[in-house]
Structure formats: structure tokens, C-alpha cells
Length: 167
Figure 1: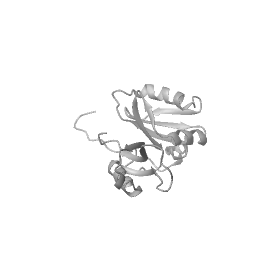
Figure 2 (figure 1 turned 90 degrees about the horizontal axis):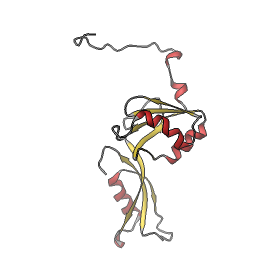
Figure 3 (figure 1 turned 135 degrees about the horizontal axis):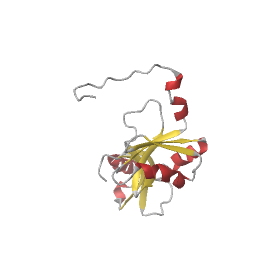
Figure 4 (figure 1 turned 30 degrees about the vertical axis):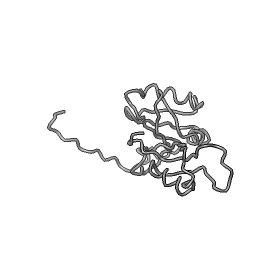
């Protein structure tokens, strides 16, 4: 190849043998947040052990920072997604269920629980807590009910945290 040549896209015909849609239905796509510290080869080998699905999942390195795991059974995939937040080499990874048409924000958010303490008594309302949480990310759950007893000195909420933002 010459450096002067432009890459010409290859158009594949819309034939069943060229589509992985059916085989992707039981898969997750993920990305590492620190590729220098999270070797893809090790991640592909280690995550099935962490998930306890050694012989029921197949991992594929899609790039140096992206991966795919295809599960044999729906319940295994659902269990991994239920726990949602996973780490590898002491760094978080972002995972989500495969979808045919990727949304713009795909794999850009990490679902995390956050605790806040020392809320001023005059601002101890669900709306105030949601407003605070909204500054950190898209609110998923606020674990606070103003009509129930509160025995902890903190309030928890779960947000979709934009992984491009500093913590």
C-alpha cells in the first residue's frame, strides 16, 4: 500500500451470513477506563472467573480498550448486568448489554451508588437530595423516603456517572 492511497470503504451485501445480530443477542459490550493498566488479554481470561461463568461465556477483544462477552444462557448475562459495576486490575470497566443500534452515549456512563452526609436539616427533602445528585450525573434511584425512619447518617442515591468527568 502507498501512503497516498485513500482507504475505500468496503460495502458488504445485506446477506444473513454477514450479520452477527443473532449471535450478539446474548452479549455485553464493555470498555476499560484505563487501558494502560488493564491488559485486554488478561481481562478476557479473568472476567469469566469473576462472574463464575467460566465455560458458559466467550470473550473477544474488539480493540485495546473494548471487549465483548457472549453468554450461553440469558440468566448468566442478566446476573452480570444486575451487579453492573465491575472492576479489573483495580480499575472500573463499563459494560452494557449489546444493542443493534448504539445510542450516542453508549458505554460513557457508569452506574454507581453515592452516599452524602451532613445534609442541613432545612434541606432534608427528597427534592433537594435529587437536585444535589443531579449535579453528579443522571439520577437512577434515590434511596430516601421522607415518611420512613432514617437510621443512617447519610442518604444514598444511584447515578449514571459520566466516566469522562473527573471524580
